[in-house]
Length: 543
Image (cartoon, rainbow, N blue to C red; front, side, top):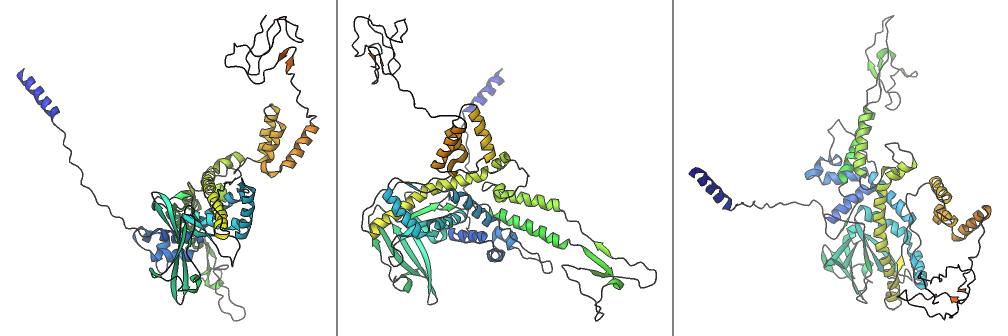
């Protein structure tokens, strides 16, 4: 069996040999960006504005790569023109999300009354609530922005809070920490466009004026001639960035809710425009024989049809006697179900992961019960939670910035620590009827008090005084009287309760003086068992 031995030896040699793998050749993949962050911000702003003319102009000026195939970039064939309609959905999403967040923002909670008082004055002077609304909208569709504080005693005696959207700010990071924020403000004077860069950093504010990307004297134009650089405590920066999501494309910048959704918005507009075009083309056509065409009774001329009320087409007629001339009506069949299915599909793609259709008043599945409505609101709830978290993280810094700007820049004081809480109410609460049913069952089951029932039912809708009155009235109607808790007798004969707690060693005797002769203890059992200590340990008396 030498051949078997030889075969085994060959197998061993094969196993002992090394596996050589030729590595893949590296590929150099180059992608050319069509727009920078500012360009994306401009595009998102146009979608938010919702003007169909602006959308068509933007995409027809940017007809490159995939954009040239989009609905808004396409051009109609001569003689086959179609009306392009924008649904307005992007702007509706932003406005709706803003309306479901900000109304639930309660009054700010300060630890220091003096800080609360000065903030109330600053908030009123700056119309803070309105400014937050604008900031939230632009942060949603642009991606980010920043707040800054300016001081101008000719305008206000308080710090002036300003908001700049993401296309007008630049963030400078150092080791993943914000070190400087540049605010860009364009000014047009003498037929030229100047750009003011306000550099806000820790301990300084520097003003730089640019013309055609070249640095010029800040006093060149009237709008900036009075600006001066400022230095202060280098632990303070009077600028705060604000973003809700992080951009997956631009490092250190915020992400827009329109990201990855613009193609879906474009498809939705195309679906709706084609549907409406089909309706226009599918209007009934009336064919009237020549002999039956209406004439003007005054001059005998044919009456021209109006495309909106009496559309008709002339057909051959027979003027002979006893001939039957009929008016024919042609009504094309429009596939409404197909258009509706396409529209609903495109709409779902636009709203996925952003907002629930029911929040926008859209109920494609006709689920009307309260539980189904709350389930459909979960997408909105997730987005709202992300927005609330971003606000609760950013606004305390904005408040602290304004208060310290008032102390440092206006009154020459020092930096102080500002602690403030930004509370928000709940969203998508159950209906009052369902709450009453739940609370009633809990009350009947003995697991909820009257006080808790009132709190669960009315929450923030009633103040504490009204809640107390309601609790008192309910107790009176139910015959419940408030009684004082009975006092505890701390002594039993010669015994005294050890309220300070027992020793670590439970068997160790306490400090009580126990007489040698056992006395009868009123109320005690005849077993001779001693009273327990306050910590639950048992002490035995000596006999």
